[in-house]
Image (spheres, rainbow, N blue to C red):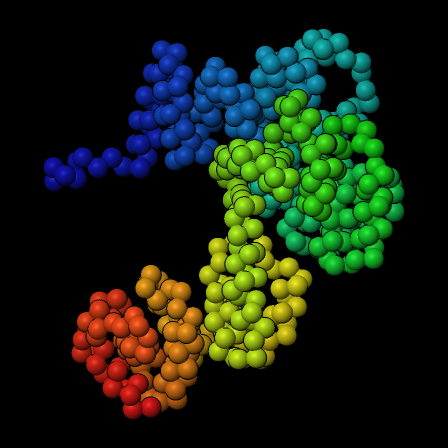
Length: 478
């Protein structure tokens, strides 16, 4: 019973953390308060009072962007809209950001009906009166762009898409928002939807820089080479009119491997403190690496990794090593006429962390040329297709890969596949793999100068001597 009383129920954790946080907040110990408030929000994301207090802590600790992000998150999830708009308006008044303060304030006034606050804003910022409906749409449009760009900049593409899809139809049909949504579909690899949207945008305005950049990317991804070349030429002639267009063009040029041209656009933006986003740091890291400055590439990759909600993928130097490994070790296996070597090549491809970066048109051309059996194994690996025989072979290779002594023994994997196919023709327990792997390993090493004892093979794969002996007898009989 004593032990049970020491367990703090989940709901009391929030209360206790918030009580301590409030105490530290009143004592102006903002860093300590921050630590407890972050725990409160982790356990109870809809605790708006804690969100407000944490935003103030961030502001006092000079982490203003983090303070804004707290309210952006609430708005993106459709929670506490009035309070979040008001808090953002007040925060931006403090930061002397009149445009943001006014437009977030208008969103608050339109949402809450607080005409007094609206009058106060119009007096404070000395704004002229606009047509009511137009003003409301402008304020909504501003907020949608800010929230979308925040989510997209953190790599939260699904959240960004969901946020736009919750907006009014009039907002979704706005040209700016359609451009944002098309970009989201592009990065989510929903190519057909993206293509339809971009072609409509470019019919309406052929000079649209954002649509031109992303449509060119889309053509590259879809391997529409002739049209792609035409649009690349158009991109090279573009003179960006503002920072937004400069940023967009710089990101796209980096992706298209025009690193020097990309740097000329992006480095000045970074120096000005503009667009400190996931995309900027990724592009700068890639650009610096391929321009021969690995130290700067690592610096920007570290900044990229700070976006904890977004998986940054693999850094360019790791991708390079993966490609070199593929070219040297895997491609020759996949292009072999030997079926067993192809299976082993597919297995190695599957073991590469970040193997998606190797899924180029050239690699897919190799995969498309494989036989039906090998394609079946590929379906097993990619789609999780349930295939009993190939599963037995695969689990055996996996066991070899997980042991340092056997991990790089190509001939041993090929020996295993051959033995496995013979075993599968007999009446064996297909769920049990490791005793057979231990036995094959024993037989294999005893044909080399790296002889292994029966005991060491049993220890290597954690099998009993009895099961090893039974497996060995089975192998010797086929």
